[in-house]
Amino acid sequence: MSLNDILLHVDTYPDATPPEAIEGAVGFVRLIGGRVSALAVGVRFPVQSNRVADYLIGLSSMAVDEQAKSLANGQASLAAFTAQARDAGVLGQALFETVEYYAVADHVAGRARTRDLCLVPLGGPLDGQAEVATSAVFGSGRPVLVYRGGLPAAKLGLVVVAWDGSRCAARALADALPILARAGEVRVLTVINEKPAAVAGLAAEAVRHLKAHGVDAVAEEVDGKGASIGESLEAYLAKTLPDILVMGAYGRSRLQEFILGGATEYMLHAPRVPLFLSH
Image (cartoon, rainbow, N blue to C red; front, side, top):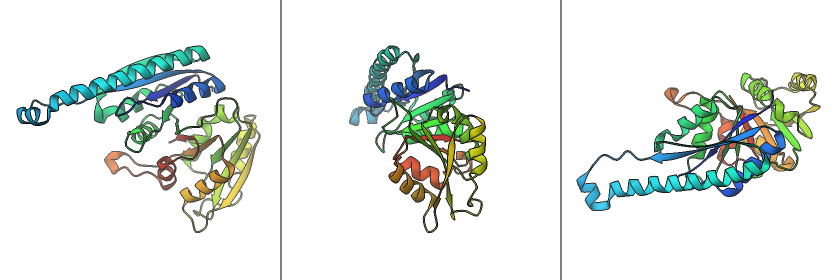
């Protein structure tokens, strides 16, 4: 299956998604094929009338101003996206939708359910994009590509698949096949001595499966003894600098006191390379 129908989340508040992140998404979609739609979600602040707060700090007026800022950011970003995506021949839709501020992440996850892939550019630590990415990964049922910069646009070189033989890793492997088929090099990486199931030779079946789909992959192993899985992956990425890391995402729902898996949490905190995540 090709990734023909891609969604890009465009942040509108408190700051707009940087122009280079939009440009990177458009270039990446042009590289892998398909079309991309941008979703800018404007925020609402449901402020109940409060005479004291309005008198002291102008609370209602502040809410109106912040909503207007979100609207302006979204409109400007969508205009830039539309021009770039049209020029690149990958334009899908330019969508602007408004929800309450605390519902943005869940709204994006819902919209991603009918897309082949959701792109989520990360910004600063306070912009809420990590929460959007997390909600999309665990709430959409579709793969999510999280990036802070450096999405490949001219060519797709090395792609690494983190493999521990789990269900989540298998899901990520299957979801990423259209990207793996376009990569110049594919490595299936197992961190051994980190958990009982992650043993030497574990990746052989994954490599066989990829070759059955025309992907000439190789297995690679690193010793994770004495380090966390996140630290082992980070050290490997620092050495190899792949274009994309594919990995399964682990976690439970918010109703079950949502806890990210160690590797997922570590990599989302400050991703060195774009992360293709599936759950």
